Image: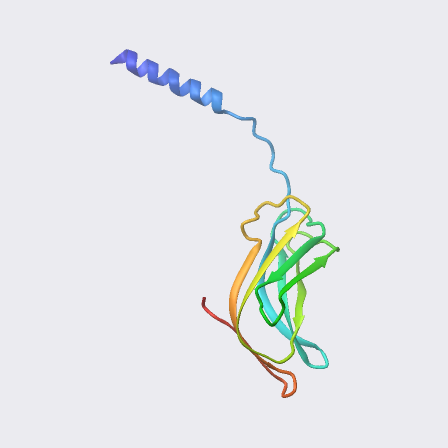
Amino acid sequence: MKPLIVISLCVVIVLILNSSNPVCASEEKPDLMFTGITYHSIIADLPCLFCIVKNNGTATASEFMIQAFGGLFLFNDKVIYNDEGLAPGDSVEEILFITSPYFGIYRLNLYVSTTTAEENTSNNHFSHSYFIISSTLLHVWVFKELPW
């Protein structure tokens, strides 16, 4: 019984010594993520849809790009560039589109990417369904997030 314990201990020690990697201080990286969708009027009371991007990381994000797709009549595919970057903890609103008369349920898909390596890329996607009524002639704007 004792030789088995000694052999087991030796195997555990060898495994620990062989698997140990040098531990380095973590590198500071940005982490871009979508924190929401908002809308408000900017030009001649036309409602505009914005996405909010936040840098949740520990380093400044260099320029980044937002890809919007799946909005059907709202927009087919759209790319928004931000060449100013984003400091850690800061947020920015980026305009997605200015509305014209629309009615329906739309699936909005967004993806943000940067040239800088990020802490977490699993939060770079945003996808929600919205019910939208927009009539610029009557100044009616209904924008409701759906649960699916």
